Image (cartoon, rainbow, N blue to C red; front, side, top):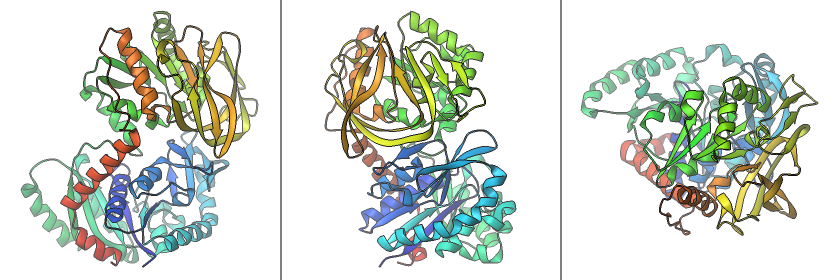
Length: 508
């Protein structure tokens, strides 16, 4: 029984398509089926590097984990990484193709349809069920003629569609009915059920509306999912994290992440949120910075423009003042580049500026190249003092995605040695720190997912404040924690959706 599928589309962005797709993948896996996720085209700055060194969207990585599969670019053959409001880097089959404007890419899409069809067919032949995720809304009627990600993809796969609406935003009945109204007759026939997501309140009060909705759209409601706090990565979750900042729990260790305009791979810091006594804040203005125990500079899709933002906003000066008072700073990828003396972009890879000064907190220099580095890496901590006390010899895994190469000079030393790139053994620098041991930089995304390293760093911050050391459960990795969350998601799906009807829609 190979080649069954179901497609999850939404009334708009951020309605929960990605998380529901992950949940269905988990349920199907638990029920003994070979299942894989698929999204023909993803637009996100959060990306991941596969074991083959290919780049793809992290949402499909989460879904692959939920399905019990190794993530592969065949699950997300096209990734768009916005560089400006109107331009994106187009990544095809895991490799950077070129930068395109929205209009250029729209005209280019029909050339991709055949490739998408072939990749999907190959994935379908290897799995019992493929759960396909759409993007945005299928009711974008101006994009219908060249669509390859919503109803255009449903046609390629001959997929039945489940439509998701977000009641937390308000207007969910209008969104569902309006979406159905704007579909063609053929497209409406593909929609076999709808899901209402993020419900808070008394379901009995909602039920009359469900009956009225059916009378209007003639499509059954497959269930109502409650607003539930699960620690599972969502593609657009940063906006929600930032909006809920004031609701964050208090913690003895205060970590401030600088929310730069072109922030990428903010999921690098998810693991920190699960550590007892740690408060993680996203900061985008000077008055919000205050005096944290650790400042994190994240990755960026436009390092030079984000460096200018930090400078013009006054955040750079504030970080330097905090550094002079001993506050620790850690930069990842673009954040690492910003900590250095200088950033050069001779090929105008990211910006029209050829050169810009960095923050000068590390004696490093970055030069952007034409070719992007995309690789998984493994390494070991080779310096074990100060903020890294007790972590020497601890192994770390992660991945690198960057256009720049960074060299360090006097006043810097390596704290991390890479000993494996993809499947090849090597010996190279994986991260540098200043002599004082309170400024660190690395290109390794996911470094904080290595809980033995991260708990060591947090305990050293606690020690600096005179707080008791937290014991780290070496048997509970961040991956094991995520597995628990996927199981909780599956439980929620089973408890609130008509899975018997969904299996019928799938054709099982």
